[in-house]
Image (tube, rainbow, N blue to C red; front, side, top):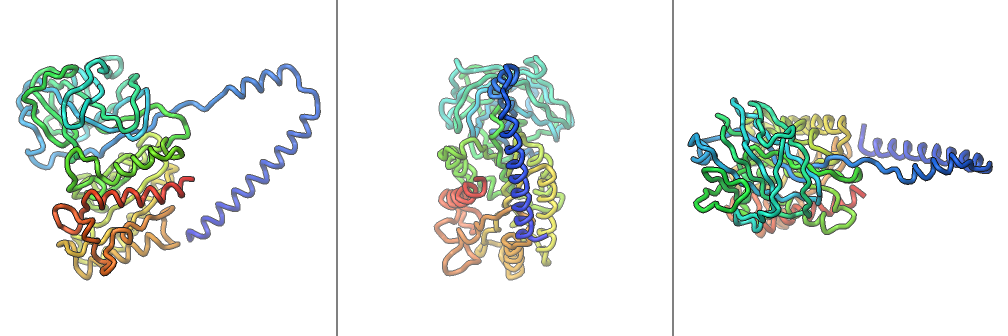
Length: 434
């Protein structure tokens, strides 16, 4: 079924529903010619006061990974002593009541958190918190939280009013570290670890710093039912490779800032599910895009939309034309999302001439895949042409030099380039959602 036909059928269905509602309204008006009883008046008053219940909405999240090498594990974490980890997160929408998903997905032994607290982080470059704001997080009423090997748990809810884009510190005192650590390798912001118990204090002199998230998977907030999460699924281009630490210049950072500045879209959260170095297809490290659909899209609280920017790593490693495989993968992802009531926006794969990924074969795959994304036969509900937005005017196979990363690799972007991606996606979403 073509995209045009789907839109036509959707329009006809909407017209039929509108006619049904008009007929129903006409019948109601005729019945209202009779006297209204006191009981009916009371029922009307109760109905007017009834509102839809609030629901959980993901306000922040990241995609969990396995450890690739020992350099991802701070020495304190392997010392056998009690350690405290302080991690910072920046939720994309405001809230007052929240909860966390903690992951020990790749651990072969239990994770034991002796205490966990959240507080206002005074500055994103420092471990110091507003100690008066600190609140304990519990699980099933207990301050000791055990996450069994290979599992995830969702904490109890806690009252903690905050505003969108505030920096929140999540501190965990851990006495039993899993033998294999579950993490996200690239937080793009500073986090801290220190030996001893320091959950609610600022006595962190000598703490080690790192730019990874450990065990912390999702933060949900209780929100109005008209709020929705937008998951951004991707690789290093979504994960923000090459940006300066604590600069918050990933494309998703720009996107959430623009959404918050827009009164009509400020209730939509942005969840970055990018994992650097990963392909869309295959079985690579359990982190392929297609392999993460259930965990990182469908199971996210309140998700209604997904933005997909993936495929360049598949193309870069291809020795034959894999365009049909990528397209089939897109269609599988969209089908799974549609079954869960999620609409999917595809992004064209950005140019990479000047990088080792480039060859005539790889460029032809990119063009074929992009043509599909933008076609009427595409499975996607819509598309954003990022490739055209960043391409050089003189060579469409190459990104404009003003967007190239500090690595000068003609694959990743600098802050200006990522900002353009975020702005381009925002400009599309504000029309698509409305």
